[in-house]
Length: 225
Image 1 (cartoon, rainbow, N blue to C red):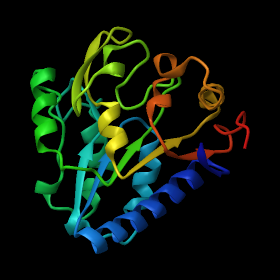
Image 2: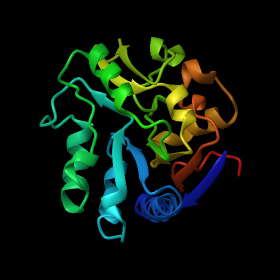
Image 3: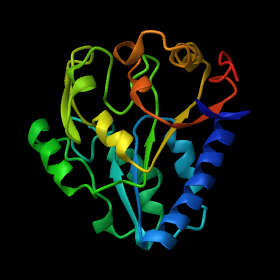
Image 4: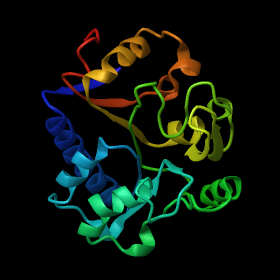
């Protein structure tokens, strides 16, 4: 595991945000644009706050999403809404360059349509990890763990709902994969992932290859570093 440990969640988010701004500048210089897929959950909100204050060439940034709940864009549960309120409303990114997953539509059709609009290769996929080891909307013991293609509708029995999600193939095809994980509740799962316990079926995040992990000290407490 390529692990970067910071003392606090705020410090981990700040480091990830600074590295993202640097990665964006490099991609824009080399290829003329930067494509990044954002994640849901609460942890990215700290990173969004930092990104709002950093210098970035937002005119050449394209924002995508690694997963979405089966809700509309105005729902408090929407990953898009969280990113919009926390980051996108505060920066000068053109509206046409923010590509949301349409969670209010039929999940299978919305997934197919989203796959069709993705670039050939994303520069960066930002991910989190749940207490159960899920990442994006790839949950333990769901069919999405072995699905092909780029974007899927994944039925999550434990939540009794559909989710739209990148597949492992799409995540691992990106130029970079970063996981921002904080909190003591994640420490045990991270230890098990590091030691290969239960594999992808039990801890889906283990299916993310060659990732850079941005952790706070609490999340990293049980790792062998």
